[in-house]
Picture (cartoon, rainbow, N blue to C red):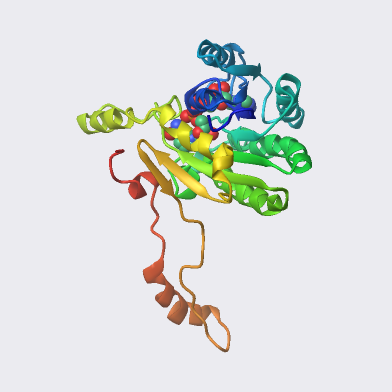
Length: 302
Ligand SMILES: NC(=O)c1ccc[n+]([C@@H]2O[C@H](COP(=O)([O-])OP(=O)(O)OC[C@H]3O[C@@H](n4cnc5c(N)ncnc54)[C@H](O)[C@@H]3O)[C@@H](O)[C@H]2O)c1
């Protein structure tokens, strides 16, 4: 019971990965705020049903939970989500920023509206909920954040510039929180999850090869991401902060973070011409390939 006596917020907990994280948090002893607007994959509509279903699952198993249907993408909504933890459980110990939507399009066809709505839920939402909890974490000199990032942002993916930018932004937000709030004993980490959920169910399965690939992907249930989230929210993860993990079926990966790869120097400084002649020639062998998440995670989920 790693989270006995604690209260945890899980955003986007009405389905997919968030639901399984909420269930696992409750099973580990936490009282859980199940936040979810109950929107479609693209962010349209609103329903309390998904959050209520998660609560019913938790309560059937003997756990404690309340629901919040406020949107993470509004500052007032985020404040209400945090207030729900205080009103129902009298405390707040951890926040899992998991809510998300998808509006995929190739960059040259991406509309400003699809850019703004994805940034609003993933990046603004992670900021708003984190910031609303920060006052309490600071006052009690304790707290833990777990943010869902994505290898679409950390590595790259086609047709997801809005989502990738938001998710890399979430990773930078997490690192910044870890730096700024270390003095208050507050930890902040990211998980890049992998799961077969409605977010990934659009992957084509028409050809025999695609069908075989999708069958393997379907083995990666959302629940596989939950133990790491529970651990990171708990006191057992003391000293673990500013890190980015990936969870992929039965693998847990510690991801790298950007560091200088190679440096070139010229005592008299550079001109555009010397960059052409000397600089790029020296750097080119170390260029990062123009790859996607699936090129890097090229092995079948194990
Ligand atoms: N499925 C994957 O393989 C995968 C990979 C990388 C990252 N992720 C990330 O993991 C998280 C969960 O993804 P999922 O696959 O479970 O998706 P999902 O669509 O099943 O769940 C997302 C939930 O967020 C809720 N939501 C949307 N907008 C909201 C808002 N404004 N306020 C509150 N709730 C809102 C939705 O109603 C939904 O229940 C997301 O952040 C996603 O980007 C998923």
